[in-house]
Length: 124
Image (cartoon, rainbow, N blue to C red):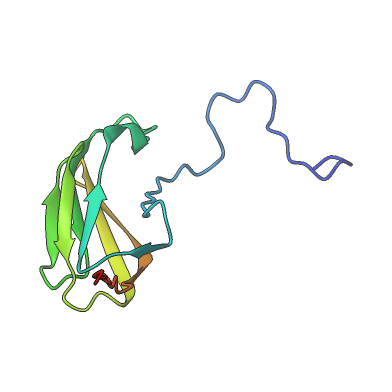
């Protein structure tokens, strides 16, 4: 360690002394949504960033709708039905890489519904 409190690697080292790990992060892009029983989840490939030499073999999501893990495809949209829409939904994402290793992460989204009342008026 140097006087500036930073660590520096040894010049000319041919093998990294650092451990390299993979991570997987997935999350809805909003924290809450007003939905009347149905909610659509989209998985555009432009939002997937993969810096490893491996490819993504599969992606599964448990939307917390009672159907368990669902295999989803990139560039697809999935309509999910929540019978009781109000409340937190805890999502589970499982990704399988081309070396058959899986990574799991969790996220949440608050789903609420606001009743829309239509008032009709009549002229007499």
